[in-house]
Length: 444
Image (cartoon, rainbow, N blue to C red; front, top):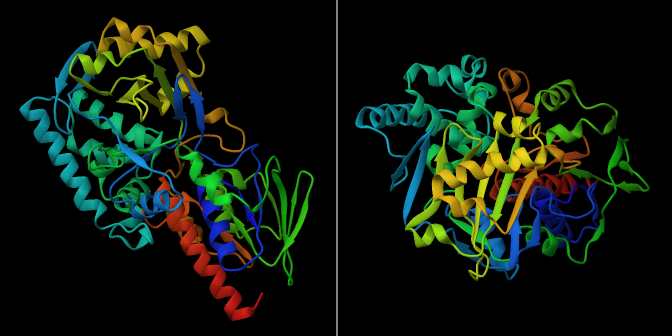
């Protein structure tokens, strides 16, 4: 059986079903899809959760085709905007408009991170030179050595916050480097054309999970309360069901495993890892408009702001073009601060930087949606579970290892593209191999 019907759980369930195994899926939320969430808004449908696919993400690209779906490119034509406090600058290319000395310092920092991340493997980060020292430090400590000025630091902060939903001071330096290595480097994760934000799925990414689970035995609205192992199998108890299976696959992030009672208890290393994990903080902002006025002004829709509250913004117009839209992200500490404001103050907080970037028309969206992932039950944040200093040193070996008849799947456990749709699919392939080998070896 599979616990969790996000993309990793959905793909695992389908792969196991295709092996000829009987699979039951329990999902705590009232619908499948996990951290993908597609809703009709305005004249089209939009993703309130994960939405992008990069060119290096071959599994998800292949799956989109297999399921009869299609992708389309993120709009990138035109000039980009960099907001440096009260200053507004425009630029082209991948790096915001900075002075020559600022660009040199940025390049030195990126080159240094690139050298370091190539020495850290996501599969076993503790084999890296100086792994314990790196895991004892935050990313902020490592980055401070490059002595970046406020503008350059702000541009980098915008990317870090968007990728992780966290601050540089929150993240273990070792975890950060391993995460970069799994995704092909900092610029690959931060980029649009040629990067992780290159394409979107026509009709929305939640359709991936929906189609994968079509025809399977899926029960939604069934949060799992207890998982009990014995010598003959696994019993999973949800709100109204008791399900008996030979093996169970847990497709829930580490932070949500803390809500499940395990009998016998999970080993200390895995329990410690779950305890240390924390979710990124992300409020996704969708602003719908009657026309794409930024395109008319020669702007791509891409904005970078180191001071927030919006860290980055992109053109998010629908596939058909019938619903012009911008999408932005309030992330890290800015997300936590935003959620403390009144509804009207939140609206002002996100519309002010949009107006600074695109002009007064940006203040008048036909619809404005602020989706706070921290408030989502059984998710608790986005885009991914994170680790601060010390977590990997004590427990990294427990991240993917099966525990008896229990297997662990999810983008957090991926060996490639951690935190992305691709990572969810890669983890499902790994678990299929684990289950297949276990059944062939023991028959149980």
